[in-house]
Image (cartoon, rainbow, N blue to C red):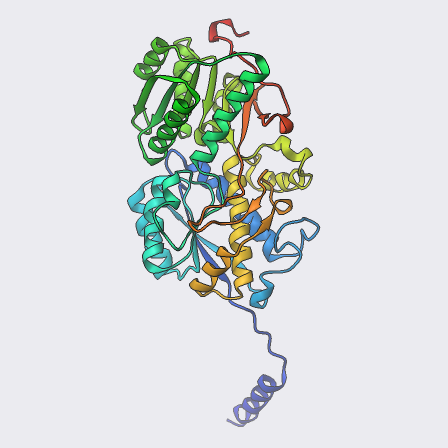
Length: 420
C-alpha cells in the first residue's frame, strides 16, 4: 500500500511536467476501384499510384521533385496531418460502387471519395456523395455526362470523351494534310455500358462534322466471350478508320479475333481504356503494332517533363510496371485532391469543396501534358489536352500532336497475312 501511495504522485507529476506530443489525426480518403474482376489490373495500378503519392505527401524523401506537398511532411495547414486511404473493391459493378460509397462515408468517415475508373460505377458512387454532401474526386472516368448532372460535389481532373475524341479526329485531319490523303468512311465498335455508348455517340457526331460516312455501328456486350460476328461485320464494311471502345479483356479478344480472320482497318483509333492498359500489350506482344489510341500520357514525354523519368522509376519499383494513362491520371488526381484539402486547412466537406473550386495548379507540377488543373462550374478541368499514341515494336509512342511526337505514324497498318 505504501508503494502505491508514492508511485501515483510521481506518475501524476510526470504527466504534468513532461512535454506532450500531439499528432494530428490522419485525413482519410475513401478510394473505390475494381480490385477484382476483368478490369482488376487497372484498380491495382491505380492503388500503386496513390500509395506512391501518399509516400511523397507524407514524407520529405522526395522534396527535390516539383510536386504539390513534396517539400513538407504531411499537410502543413492541418498541423502536419498525414493522409491515408481506405480502399474498396467495386468489381466493375455500379450497385456495389454505390453501397461502398455509403459505407466509406458513414462507417469509415472518409473526408472525400476518390474513384472509380468505370464511368458507370463513378456515376452511381458519386450520387451517394452528392446526396451526403461529401466531395467526390474522379481522376479517369471519361463519360462527359458525369460533369453535366448539375452536381456541386463532383470534380474531374481528366479530359472526357469529347476532348479525347476531338483530339482523335484532329489527328486524322492533320495526317490527311501531312500525307495528302483523304479518309471517307469510319466504323465504330463499342462495349454496351455508359463508357461505350457515350464514346460512340460522340465519335459519330464528330464523323458527321468531318464529312466521314459511318459504314458500321456495332455495339457488343461488355466482357464478351466471342467477337467473331462483330469482326466479320467490320470486314464486310471495310472502313478507312475503325474506332473501338473497349476495356482490357474485350480489347485483347478483339485483336485476337481480328488476327484469326486476317482483318484490320488501315487505321485503328482506339478510345484508350483497354487499348492502353498495360495488360493489353503484355498479352499480345507485337500483335498490338499499328494500333493507335488517344491517351493523356506517354513515357516518351519525359523529354518535355524531366521529373517523369524518376517518378516512373519509383512507380515501377512498387508495381513492377511503367505508368499507364490510367495510373498516371490517378497519381495526378490524388495530388490535386490533397492540395485542395491542405489549402482548405480543414476536413469539413464544404471547406474542401470551396478549395477544389479555387484550384489553379500549374502545368509544371503535373506528369501529364496538360496546361494545368482548373475547374469550371461543372467541376470539369478545363486545362486538359489529348495526345495520340501508336504501338510500334510492342510499345506505345506519341505520334500526335506532331510537335510532341516521338515517332512517325505507320500508315496503313499492314494486313496480318503480310506481316513478318
